[in-house]
Amino acid sequence: MKGPQTLLLWAGWLLLQRGSGQPYLRLRPSPSDNLPVKDILEHPDPEYDPKEQDLDERTLRKKLGSSFDPAFMSVAAPAPGNLSSPAPPPRLRGSAPLPGELKKLELGESTSGPRMKLGKKARRKFLQWLWAYTHCPVRYTWKDLGVRFWPRYIKEGSCFAEKSCSFPEGMYCKPAKSVPKTFLRWYCQGWSRQKYCTWIPVQYPLISECKCSC
Image (tube, rainbow, N blue to C red; front, side, top):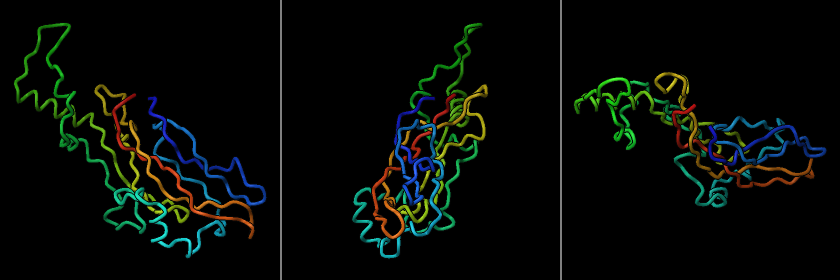
């Protein structure tokens, strides 16, 4: 699947600051089916962590401004009961409303025999079963990005791909759309005591829609 291009956070050991050993944080275009974002490799030296005075919530909220989205980001660790919202089991997926294209689906057509007629009740039950089998909801899980991101916690989406979503089997739920959320990233330049660190805005893409595809 060739998904829409979106900015993905990418951190690696490919480019190092001379003398500092801290990897650059890179932004690059990448297909949406590469989501969710892989874990970022961080330099283990705590010298590159923000200090207590750098984590003033009022200051950081002002810096992030209207980009702060409490539905998808949290300053404090989410309560244990809110850690994740898993995808419903297949038999319950049909509780979502039927999409328009499915309601218009012509049933009973056959190229090798007479047309089969379905009653209204049988048609509705079949469409509900088909939607339950092929529906691809987004599964959300809270993820800890670490102290070098603010807010630290992000509600990240993923697609339920443990089982095939097609009949016959062969297709799976995959990312179809994503939305960027702006976070603050603690970024350091230089080395040792001469380094300069500050918060910079970065876009973090989140899966917003999953579809059954090859």
